Amino acid sequence: MKKKPNILWIMTDEQRKDSIGCYGSEWAATPHIDRLAKEGVLFENAITPSPMCVPARLSVLTGKYPHETGVWNNKHSKDSEEHLTHCFEEAGYVTASFGKQHYQTKNNAFGTEVTFELGSEVEYTKYHERYEESDYDIVRYRGKSPWLLGGKFPADISETQENKVVELAKAFLSRHEDERPFLLRMSFNGPHTPVVPPEPFASSMEDRKIGIPAASEGPRGSIPEWTKALIENYAGSHVMTDAEMEKARKYYYGYASYVDHEIGSMLDWMSDEGWLENTIVVFMSDHGTHLGDYGLVQKQTFYEPSVSVPFIFWYPEQFKSGTRIATPVETRWMLPALLDLVGIEATVQLSCNRLSESLRSGQEPAAVPVYSEFILNSLPLFEEDKILMVRTGPWKFTARFGDSGELIERSLSHMEDDPYEHHNLAKEQEHQDKVASMTRVLQERLRLETR
Image (cartoon, rainbow, N blue to C red; front, side):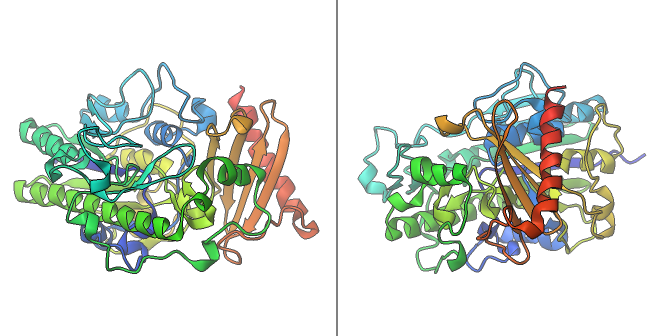
């Protein structure tokens, strides 16, 4: 009897779709991820369960939304959650995760976990004191949080977090001699801040023309008050010069190219060692980010660069290679799909649209509403307000609710007619029925949270 497939789960942080060539980027240099997409299944509209690290990561691990876990932002934590990875362990899988965990439950999601987000060379806002920052061409955000939006890694490539993750993963597989299948996660910090790729990747974008669509250069029309406050008080790109933002973008896409290089190193090694046979590979990011578009840096919005993420499955033995799925899906469905594919029964109730059939057949899945949720803890004014998004078909609807559940503001966009979300249709008379029905859907989610 053939053993169940192995699983290699590759996770990045804060990665935009346009940093990857197979998503149509004119400047990305990501041949290894592109190959996964060419031979696998790419989801064009994959929505993160939250545009913030901790709630997004916990939702993916549990199959639950933030309103179900109670973890709405990076400050929240839980004593315990039933991680879906435990279902794999109970079915005989060996599980391990190396690198950035950041899901904040006291019980581990993996049998083996080695946790580190950065090395000792660079922190999120500064280089180690042994380095002279002026030697590394840095771009530092000029707002309240002095994030390193660009710069060069000051040490050998072997000292990067991403390289160490790959080496730990290789060592894990080298020790894996029994017949049990494995679920192995490589969790990279990149291309999250600090955006300091090593050479030659730090300089790899210098001659490339990197832009963003003119239609998304700044916020236009009636934008939500919470988004306006985020721009004005926390993560607005207006405090940076055009030259600084251009340099930051080039470092970001260079970093994405470096992450792709490390992914390729792992895939090539696994192929040489025979580990890719009977192995499903999944590539995804927890959420996206802004690089001056919509007047922002960082994430924490429901604009597409923040909420829509890369999501690719590879398993030529069973999947319909070269498939591109346009129907909006959720990355929260990833582990339930893998459970289906390897024939394991989930031990928890899951409200997921199963992707397994689409992966095998290449057909579009049934269209269902997709959601994203968070609390904007970056701004004291909004730290108790719950902000939710639902997308159904071409319609994207967002609403902000106060701590006691009162509705504060809403926005509605038609993504086919208005892909850059310039026009808030929520106040137009002809759309009031749709606004009312979508409001009720989101209000019900908040009621479910309190049950």
